[in-house]
Image (cartoon, rainbow over all chains, first blue to last red; front, side, top):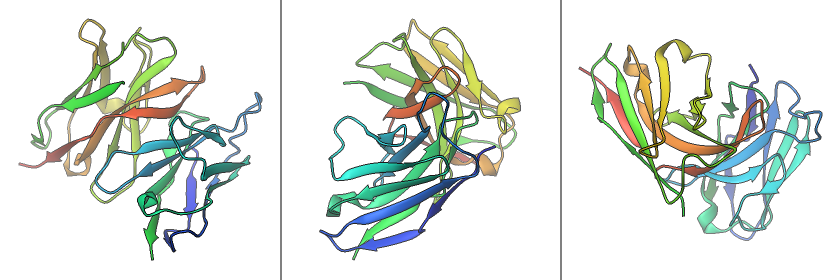
Length: 112
Length: 123
């Protein structure tokens, strides 16, 4: 099974500043078709998770362009260029290269 | 706009079967290329994928739960269901239904989610 590890656990950010979350996988998520099978989700307080980024770097429909995903192989980063108050919540990465799908433990973004 | 809604008992006794249904509205469950799945989240913890089904009946299960899980689809009702047998306290969680894309060998991009159904396992 592929193990997903996120850091940091907590991320206090001042509005207007940038923020980065790291996700590492125990095996490469790069497929021979050139896609990295890595998604990012945000779970806002009291809500269901919502898709932010799929296949490593593709923003989902309706997701603001301040969110970006990068990386390849085993190391991935979610970056928020300018954090807003509405971005608080828990961010999860998920590998989708292999079944069973597996999620990282989550990174809780808080506003300072 | 696609909408998913979970329904089912919120309290299940230990050793019994947890059964939930996800009703899909605003679109057809028969749409080509999409799988329909279940993901759970114990209180205060992270996410765990349970399994997913295609409208034609092709099903993927998480190996860690496979022996206790059955996922089925009813295209006439535009819904799919989850049965989890022999439940214990560790199965207490919010259960989400969600739609995902398919890569052909796996699933990715869960783009629509239900609001979640809290199921508590307790006598």
